[in-house]
Image 1 (cartoon, rainbow, N blue to C red):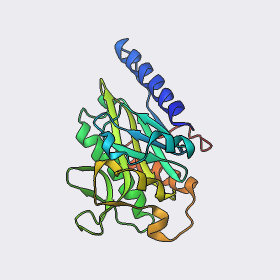
Image 2: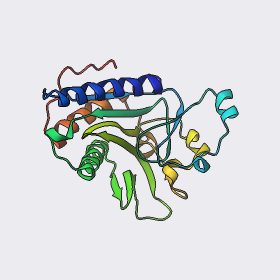
Image 3: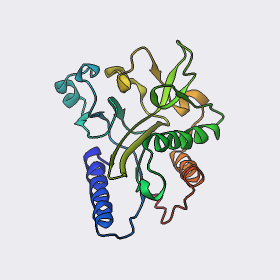
Image 4: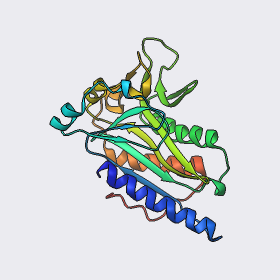
Length: 220
C-alpha cells in the first residue's frame, strides 16, 4: 500500500475514534499491517540534514518522500519490511505514552525471540536493537514513531524482515549516526515468510496488550 494511502486511512480511523469519544460512544481499535513501496519519511522532529539523497535522485529511483506528523526522525519503508499502525484508544488501556512505546517494543522483542534473535532496548532510543550497548555491533532492526491525539494513537513500528537494506545508506536512520541497521533475514540466514511474521506479531499483540484481535484479514 502506498504510504499516503495508509496515512489517509489512519487519519480516517483516528477521526472516527475522536468523534466517538466526543459523542460518548465506545471507540474501536484497529491494527493495520502493510508493506510500502520504497519511501523515506521524516518525523516532525526530524532534520533534513539526515537525508543524504536529493529529491531529483529520489524521483529517478522512484522513491517517495513524506514529511510525516509522527514522532522521530528519518526512516525508510519498503518491500520486505512489516509496518504496523495501531489505532488504539489508550484511555481503554492506560494513559501513558512511555508505557505504550515499551509495550510496542515488547511485541517485537517477543517476535524476534521466536526466531532465536535477541532484541533489546537502547536507553533513550525508541525501537528495538541488537547488541545496543556494543559500540561497534549495535544495530537497529525495528524503528518506531507514533502520534497521539486525545489518547488515540496512529503511526507505529517498522520491522525489517527482509528489505533491501541498501536504501538505508541514503539516510542517517532515525538521526542516529554510527549505528547500522539489520533485518531478521540477515540475522538468521533464513528465508522467512512475511505472513508467518505477521501472525506472530498478532499473537504477541494479543498477549502484551491483553486483547483479542478480531476480523483478521491476512490479505492486507
